[in-house]
Length: 80
Image 1 (cartoon, helix red, strand yellow):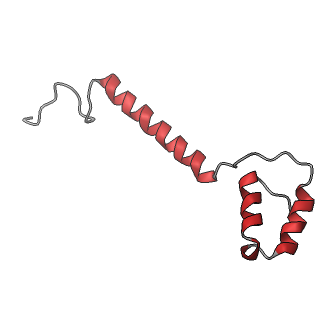
Image 2: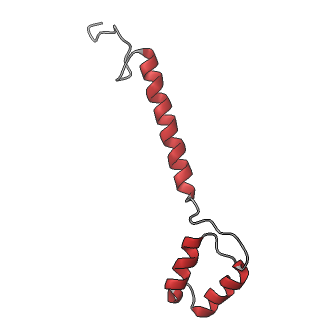
Image 3: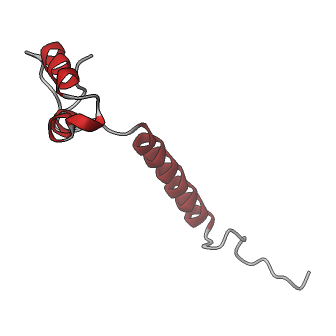
């Protein structure tokens, strides 16, 4: 199986005991030979986290469009 990133390749080379030994590292090196690898592959949660923040920001902008910071309508009173 080839490496997915340079960061993963570096981890395998510095910690061969944690990934199955030098034979496993050599196998992954052969599988990856000649491939261009990115420095880092984004974690799947990173994109979900980004999407969640984007929706929160849009919600905040919607409140500003209504003229309120706390979600209540302007001019509304609690006396009613």
